[in-house]
Amino acid sequence: MKKLSKVLEVLLHSARCRSRCSDPHCHLMKKLFSHSKACTVRSSGGCRHCKKAWLILIMHARNCKESDCVVPRCRDLKQHAKSLAQKPAVV
Image 1 (cartoon, helix red, strand yellow):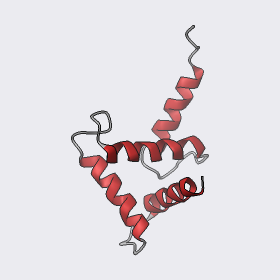
Image 2 (image 1 turned 45 degrees about the vertical axis):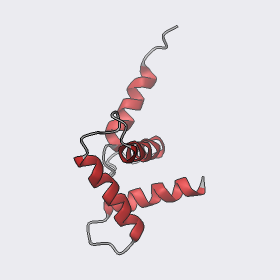
Image 3 (image 1 turned 90 degrees about the horizontal axis):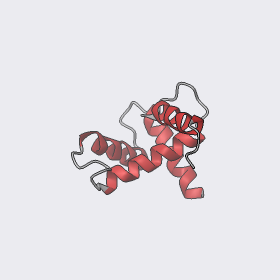
Image 4 (image 1 turned 90 degrees about the vertical axis):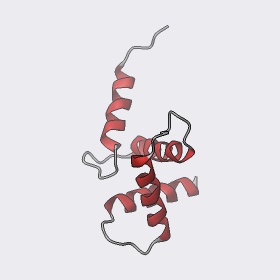
């Protein structure tokens, strides 16, 4: 659990960071999301880097309370989770 909170902390830092940051974790996170933007295989096609990026984003969005969060796709993911929660369960 401690590792997950560190990853989410780095995600938030890297989303806010606009400089050439010397933090190697920030650089790696930015590199992961840069890959995700350009990847043609995508998560649905089995790209492990894209799957990792989506997992990090989903975990962040589940815990995020900010209405105008700077993390990419956070608002989209929160809205999607909200719409799923409002759908009646199919029995």
